[in-house]
Length: 112
Length: 114
Image 1 (cartoon, each protein chain N blue to C red):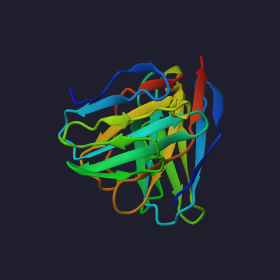
Image 2: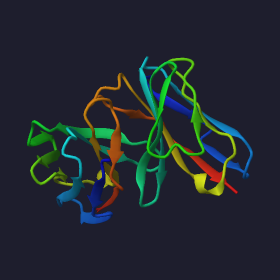
Image 3: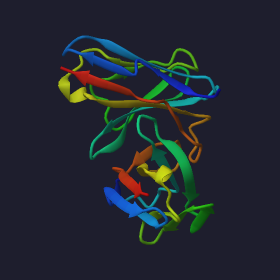
C-alpha cells in the first residue's frame, strides 16, 4: 500500500523566514496531495492541496510543488509569522475512493 | 455553524471496560472516518463509512468497531480497550468519498486506557 514519508519532524525558523516541508510517496497511482495544519488542541484543517496534473499551486504565502517523476511534494511557507506555528501533515490519496495516507507530521515553530 | 463534534473530549478508563466515542456532523456529509494520532506515526485511519450502513476497515481496525445507522452519526466503539489503544482520536467527514473532497476534522478525543 501507499507509504508517505515526511521531513523534517521539527523545524524552527525566525519570523519572516521561509519554511519548507518535504514529503515522498510510494504509490505512483496516488493523484491527490493535501496539506493539513493542526493547531494545538484542535483537529487538522486543510490549508492547500494539489492534484497530479498540476506541478505547483499557490495561495498567498503558501505554495505546494509536486514532482510526479520523483514522487515527492513540498509545502513552502514564505514570510512566516508566529501564527504559522503548528503541526503540518502531508497526505496522499489513492485513486477511487477517498483514502488518505498521512505523513508523520512536522512541528513548525516560528519565533518572533 | 458547520462542524464535526466529538464526545467526550477526554476519557480515562481501565482495561476491558467498554466505551463509545461519539461523532456527529451537521453538514449532511456522506463520508465519515475515524483516525488515531500517535507521536511519530501521524494519523492512521481506523474505519471509514461511505454512507449509511456502509462501513469498511482502514489501516488499523483491530480492537475497534463502528456503526453508521444515521447519516450524521458515526460512533467508535472499543468493546475491550487495552493500553495500546491510548491515543488521540479524530473523526472526520467529507461531502463524498471522492478523491480531493476536503475532510473536516473534529476537535479530537484523548483516550487513556490504564
